[in-house]
Length: 79
Image (cartoon, rainbow, N blue to C red):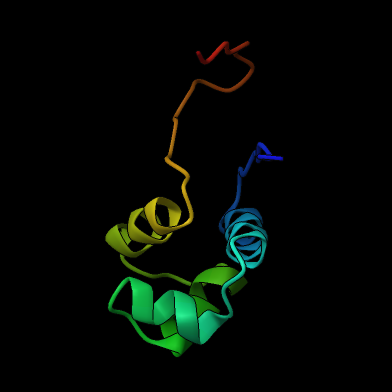
């Protein structure tokens, strides 16, 4: 089952990315290797610490997700 996540803070985004990574069956080292990054960077990302936006997008893609940005309070239907 694919889950949807809402993240309004860096900490919430990091938490969601950690769950997405775990759901994909990867540990931090495996995820890092998949996107040519380091385990320390994945750890920082999941804590909500600053990392390159390309790292976030690469991890999402590697786990079968993509970013969708919408105005707050919007009702969204994605097909």
